Image 1: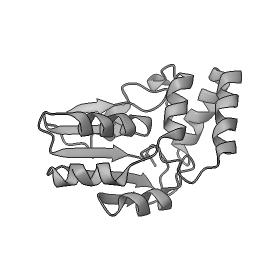
Image 2 (image 1 turned 120 degrees about the horizontal axis):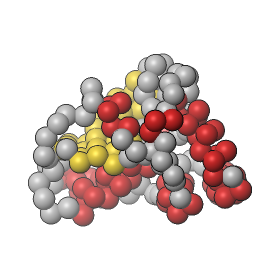
Image 3 (image 1 turned 90 degrees about the vertical axis):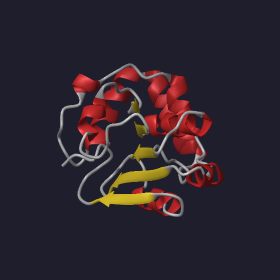
Length: 170
């Protein structure tokens, strides 16, 4: 299994072992890592049977001003921004994520805020025989889970996990 970590995180894949099957033909990613997992799968010439997108970074509904503000806050104080980010990804849980903390970059944040998921590229993966699964938390305050569910629902098997946030923990 190939796994891609979320923004400012590393080794958090252990949190998702119940939903990520092991195997050489599985690619998975969380949040920002979902973008990387998708792009890796799309450009790969090796066999991939399943793509697991866990709380994919999905900011289609956010205004340019929102995105600019997020970047400004990160540039002003990366540490304070990241601490607040860790609080927000665990909401409504109080799970301590500090053991997974990694230094995120401005470029990574820009990518995740401005990334535009391409439904035609997602459909190409489905046409290649790749099963796409998307896991979303109903109480996610990072992304709009309903908008993401609606977007991915045409090309993926989508799961809305009730009562959890971005990190899918209760």
